[in-house]
Amino acid sequence: MRRLRALGPAEAPEKSTELLTAILDRHGSAGDMVRTMAHSPALLQGYLDFSRALKRMKVPRALSEKLALATQEWIGCATCLAAHTEGARAAGLSEADIALARAGTATDRRAAALVAFAVRVLAEPSAIADGDVADLRAHGWSDRVIADVVGLVALNLLTGAFNLVAGIEPAAEEPAGAPRAR
Image (cartoon, rainbow, N blue to C red):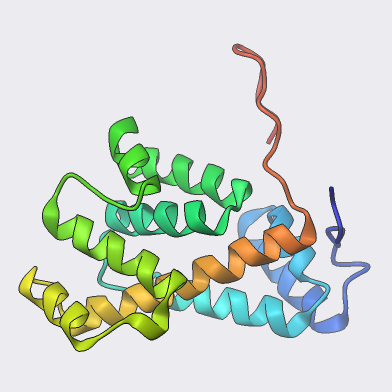
């Protein structure tokens, strides 16, 4: 059930209006979550800045989608799972890769270690110990990637939790062959 409604630039607080207008000018549309975040200019600005900054991380796109799928499965945000499943397919992941990521693992041991670490950062960050970081280094992951994973987990927690609180649900599946609304 929808709890917070999406806003347009005309009804949003002043700073959110500026942000939404800039997004609309650049992309022609703004997503449901972004328009709903517009209730809080601070949240919207923080999300946009954080999201933009994480585009510069060292984690390859396919792996970042695996990390997002694993964390969103744990968080339980169907909207984020749908978006990251689509993103994973676009990044070349197979249905088996997607299913494994949602289960918190991967076929490649190196990727599996990072995916499992991401879930632990989300679920039990106080339990992360020196050995966990040493294990990631032994799998060839740099400190930069380890730090990027923490950022990616935080971004996924933000979006997943926001969508759940706001009551944002994925668009209904359309019948096969039906034209897709854009």
